[in-house]
Length: 283
Image (cartoon, rainbow, N blue to C red):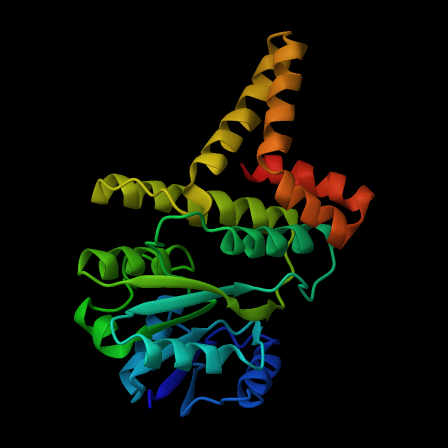
């Protein structure tokens, strides 16, 4: 059997840590060891995860963010996946579609992540995700773990690790059935700052540095075309071209009708309109 070590970075002592630990311990197939890295406070999330792996003894290390409650079957699904596929290097799951925080911004941001991970496209994934993701410890150690120096704040350290695992010949998989509930409460300010400064800018820099253009998950063509439409619409309005602006809006909604339908089902029509506006801002 595959032995699982769960690592939870918690150097900022989040209030959600208790719920996170309780969900892990209540799993139908609990891990062989649970390592919570809660100090020293100077450690970044990337460094805390590296410290956790250094203490781990399992064949597979499962990273769980301290603001995630894993579903009861999540760890069992991870163990079964690695036992069934000896060539699998890493696997990650997704948030479920019922985030704990119910503000419009929080619900939108968490539902967006859920939707992207449940519609990954046809190409194999080339990135990793540490909200709920697992990797063979030997492969993790072979590529040097997370780059804590380049990413001193929570950013794309998991995506960058995924790139190095793939470059080393690893095979990564996304399993949407491996789910957790996100407990984080987003604000408009934190969403914009995270999406731009902590995600978009370093992700573009990574693609330039590695000379490899990402084309899966939220870098797929529908997302690129959506970003173009959300740029064209305000520019067309500013230039006095309302027909062009309306065409861009129609294109944006059409490209994202599946996700916008999810917003209507989960938030209701009125809040879904706000969600569509947030989606345009995100792009």
